[in-house]
Amino acid sequence: MITNILLLALPLVVAYLAATVWHRRFKQFANFPQLKPSLLWGHLKLIHEYTLKGPPDVHYDPVFATMAKELGNPPVMFLDLRPASYPMVLVNSHEVAEQVTRASKMFAWSTPKSPTMGALVRLIGPESVLMKEKENWKQLRKRFNPGFAPQHLMTLLPCILDKTDIFMEHLDRLASSGEEFSMLKHTINLTFDIIGAITMDVDFDAQKSESSSQGEFIRLYDQLLKMYGQEDSRFPWWMSPMREWRRYTLSNQIDRLLETMIRAKHTQQQQQHTTNGSSKAKKPRDVLSLSLQGSDSLSRALLTETRDQIKTFLFAGHDTTGILLAWLFYEFSRSPHVLQAVRAELDELFGPDAGPAAVRARLLAPGGEELINRMRYATAVVKEVLRVYPPAGTARMAPPGSGFTVTAGGRSYCLDGAIIYNCATIIQRDRAVFGETADDFVPERWLGDKAGIMSAGAEEESEKRDEAGRTFPPGAWRPFERGPRNCIGQDLATIEARVIVAAVARRYDFVKVGLGELDLNEKGQPVENDKGQYKVKAEMYNTAQVTAKPVDAMRMKVRLRA
Ligand code: HEM
Ligand SMILES: *[C@@H]1O[C@H](CO)[C@@H](O)[C@H](O)[C@H]1NC(C)=O
Ligand SMILES: *[C@@H]1O[C@H](CO)[C@@H](O)[C@H](O)[C@H]1NC(C)=O
Image (cartoon, rainbow, N blue to C red; front, side, top):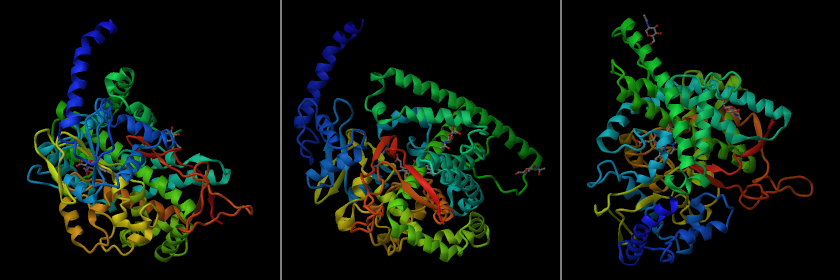
């Protein structure tokens, strides 16, 4: 049976390979900067060889970075992934990245997303705002924008603080036992709890597994995410049907749980609507309520659409933010002057009492929100973590034949039909922008940057902020990507991170174990290198699981500060 299929398919395969080879030699990308491809395997073989030079599970970004360096860091680099995937253009320069993500005559809401996004369909759903295009996307984005306006986000502070308290209960316990634990698992449960409360107005209690009412949901989600590891994502679905089947069944189970929650919410909304009538009661702005707003009946289409947005927000909203926090605590463990400066700033802004209750009281008192914006140094730290360890990126594709062209260094490149990958890891470590210290963790570089922290969720707002005086070209820092399809949750993520830093930084010392462990001298003392960081025995690195995750899930110990 199998042999029959193979025999039947053989002429097709031969024809396909012949066409590929012909394309390679004569077509569109032949003159792009690139390492020498093999005629049959394009750059796949080279990528494999470069991967073998580092840890086997290293994220593809550093591998691409090494390859680009070999070519002298051209603004774009061509990678021929045929026959495994589409040809790809790696974007290494912020000027080109901006041309890809800004609104243009050809694409009113920037270059369309790459079809490779389809691989995530079980995780975020086919109707996801992350994947939709044009008017369909615009309508969804408009609907959810009010839920991410800065003034509204500040009303979420009590919720963020409650969840941070539970996180600290865990850290207190781990500090007194002195045991080793995975920081990433804890930060991801924390951010999951927060995003659950914010998207659906439900308490996931991820951090209290015993009492977790939604434990089933989180367990399913965790299992589903595990099906997206680096090994699992190397091949298309038809080459590993069992993996795809598993993703499918897990996703279905999650869908059913979510649909039950959505129905319950809809019923509740209807009831409130009838009892409260047109009262001026504040409208809820959680994603779920926004999605159902103004719909009296819950049609199948609305149920599916709402479910997929919830899946998207739950996924996009917790994983990345958990990673940001894990790397942040890692930097606290090995950058003594950074931790010291963060603490000094907190002493100044929040007063000398570092206890959780005092921090909470200050943040919830009138003017408390302002404190978050005044955490200038901590803001710079968050910004620098996202520069050096960007958790996510964007992949786009202009339709073949559209003639979508970018320019760089006086040359133009027609990119249509290729996956266009804005490689944040490379762009954000550009020596032409960040100088000799491009690879180093130096939060201070952001202190003079008048643009403050982030560009806001609303696009008009972010355009305005771009006008402000900046030390660096705005497009050189793009962990949330830029343009109309930028991250809707960026302000939420950075507010969360700063609140958590305010609560945690003065309470604990962080100690990395395993990779990234401090290299102590004979007296048992850490040794500073010339960059003001402690020497570590072996460097940490990122691995790929949809997003870029610290390889050992950030194994650490914490100590309560004396
Ligand atoms: C440190 C944390 C975060 C990082 C680094 C990050 C990064 C990104 C990036 C790079 C994109 C563009 C993706 C693409 O083009 O395919 C994006 C989009 C998005 N993010 Fe985030 N994100 C973070 C936090 C959040 C949070 C907290 C939420 C939700 C509450 C969120 C929700 C979304 C959504 C819905 C989109 C799609 C927006 C659209 O297409 O209109 N993200 N994010
Ligand atoms: C995270 O949450 C899940 C689900 O509630 C739980 O099973 C797991 O033990 C939690 N992990 C940590 C490190 O708290
Ligand atoms: C009105 O709405 C609020 C929540 O928005 C709810 O707590 C309350 O029970 C509703 N009914 C009345 C009669 O106020």
